[in-house]
Length: 346
Ligand code: NAP
Ligand code: ZN
Ligand code: ZN
Image (cartoon, rainbow, N blue to C red; front, side, top):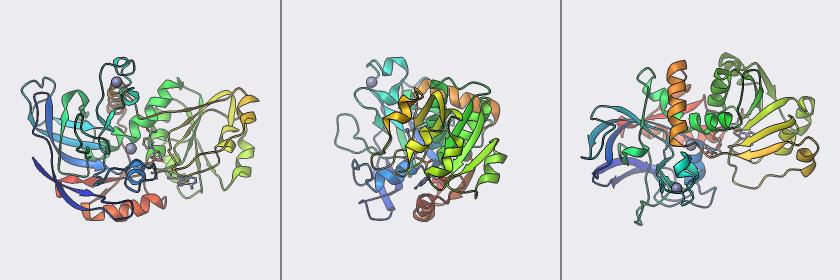
């Protein structure tokens, strides 16, 4: 099946129109016409080879919402016309210790990423949602709650689950003090989800520019930081710190904001190593952990929660020919708060 999309052909070239073939749907496959795809900072890290793992041409996009156009004969969960979503992975071994515990993003054989992996048993790269259509095994296809706006629901497939999963894993409870570091795509979803779980949420951002938006989304406080010293006042304040920052920054100062026995979760994935002092952890028995997206069971739980609470992303629509300009705005921190591509226009 021929589809149209946008691809990066090198780490420095802008995205350009690109036509390519999707596989013919197999027995378990769902063929999806993509309506919307969010722009995640990971798309940019990948295409610019920040993580040194890019495969070109690279068609990014893992916040996909679309409509089922056809189903293979063995498909049982979806029918033509269903509104569906695809997130960060489209395959996993389904047998390892992680997969059998609904932790597919941590598949020990490596999840098949929606873009930037190889199709299992082949040398063809997987291509993502900056395109008009995709073919995915129904096991990895999600149902989008009918009550949610489909464009604004697209970012739930990465930004939503990536922040939901660690908040649930650390057992965030009503009344806990939660700091969200970086108020972009992931950060604004983390605020909404943290507030909906009853936490006292503080946004830590580089300036006051977005403070009114953070408060509107339910944050209780906003801290503007311009360096490590400005965080010293907030030492020993938070039960949980969720760090979504996309660039190299001072995590030691942020760790110092945790209470004793508090947990800091890194989900932001800067392209270089980060420094910390062992004593910042040792002296308060603080924990530092990372988290990668979330499994399918947890994603369904998050989508149900968002459906029940009316939670979606704050989005700006963008047409395919505006993707490069949107990327520049994401990199400069000028995103309010997720760009979503109208993929019907590819
Ligand atoms: P985004 O919308 O660009 O948000 C990142 C935020 O980080 C910005 O809004 C900004 O917040 C802050 N920031 C940027 N540069 C900074 C700097 N030099 N110093 C301090 N703060 C800075 O990006 P996103 O889509 O939310 O993604 C965030 C990160 O998470 C990326 O690295 C992405 O690859 C990663 N990610 C990880 C996973 C996972 O599974 N772990 C999943 C998705 C994305 P302020 O303007 O408020 O300061
Ligand atoms: Zn993402
Ligand atoms: Zn596995």
